[in-house]
Image 1 (cartoon, rainbow, N blue to C red):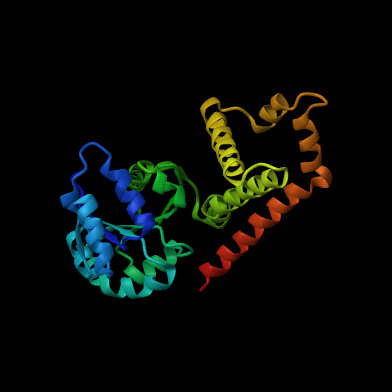
Image 2 (cartoon, rainbow, N blue to C red):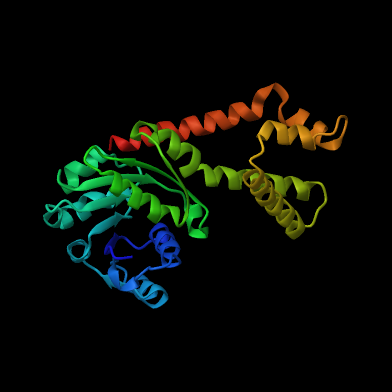
Length: 270
């Protein structure tokens, strides 16, 4: 990797991206600078990945060709104020800051900055992330392709128009929490049926993981898969009848994603 990268923030998401990139052939840790104010966290990143760290966002911006904005949304303004003087040369800024539109980012970091907005999820820590990518008007094809390579090392990517990002935030950004909620509900139900807690948790987790792995590996249609598992008059059919009664489950899922999308739209206005 010949491009020098500066991370503005060194939290879990930034570490997930870095860890995935570090596994790619040609990665050069000496060309990565991470801005992190916590000395303990900075030492951890230096020791584990061999990158350079600094407490100064400006220093990280000055040293890098590409910047990855990985701070909390409420910290974007202060980080932008510190780094804006180094963006006049038209550096590429890849932002994973939740809710911050490219318009907001261009105003904060300057109109010369080439901006690519990404909505990833926490699964990238396990190299199984899902990241939606949208470029600002001045982002080049090469800029977007670079973001795809960087985030693609940590999972899957998809290009979408920025107007779709509230829906993306609801489905894949917040989705891991909803998925985990379903897993926990299944484990809890297993315990209610008399299973030991550890066994119920293992059965639920491996069932969720295995099903997702099967569907991805085979490309099977979900409805076809359900039909194949549901023997007529069998246990799965009985369970599916209860699950789909009056469409309550689908309505709950729809309402869940709608609430998350609406909140995403609200936060974008802050």
